[in-house]
Length: 284
Image (cartoon, rainbow, N blue to C red; front, side):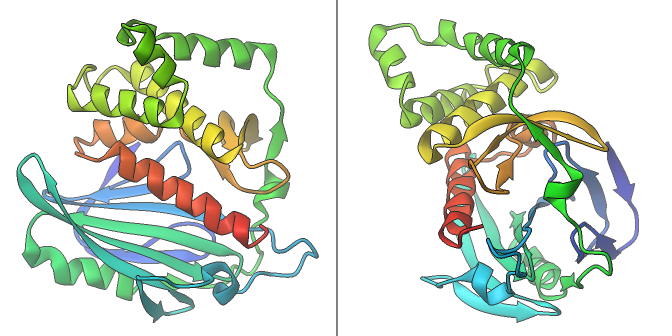
C-alpha cells in the first residue's frame, strides 16, 4: 500500500537501515523491497539480511562487499559500498541512475536512484551519502523468522497455470524452443513490456510475468521454487539451495508497472543475477 510522505525526512527501512528522502510517495512492496517516487524520480531498495558465515560468525561489511572492479568505493554512517552512475535513454529522453550497493554487518542494501532532471543529481547523491546503518539491538534472524517449505501440489499447479498464459505468444516452433532458454524467457518479457500487451490493472498477468522472471533466474543460477511463510503471510519465492539467499520475483514487475515506471527487464534480471552471484561467492 503506497502512502504519501509529505515532508522531507529520514525513513526507517529494516535490518537497521535508514535513508533520507524528499517529499514523495513511499511503498513497502510484497517482494520485501521498498520504493519511493516523486514527479520525475524514483528510489528502489532491496535489502538482504544474512545469518552469518557457515560457522555462525557475523559477516563484516568488507567481507560482504568483496573485490571492487570498476565501481567507485564509498562509505557512510555504519556502512561501506560502491557507486556508479548509469546513463540511459528511456522513451527518447535521458535517464540517470545512481546505482549503489551499501554493505554493513550481516546485511547489504541495493539502492538505486533514477531521475530525468540533472538538477536532481545532488539530492540523489544525498540520499546515498546520508544513509545510515545501525546494528539492531536485537539482531534480525530472517531464517529463524521464516518457515521455508517445499511447494505443495497446489503451488506447483498454480505456477504451471501461470506459465501457460504465454503459450499463445510463442507462435512458432523456433520461438517455443528459444523460450526454453534463459535468454528466450527474458526476451519474451521484454517484448510484452515494450508492446504494452497488458494494462496496468492486469495484476494476474504481471504476476505470471514475475513467475517467468523467477524461472529465468532459477534456470540461470540453479535456484529452486519454495514457499516462504512468516508473520506477513505465505508467498512463493526462489532460493539458492542450502543458503539463506531468497528472492520474491512474482510481484517485481507489477510493482514497477503500477508506478508507471519505465524500466529495462534485462537490467532488472542482471542486477538480481549479480546480487546472488556475489553472495554465493562469499559462501552465504
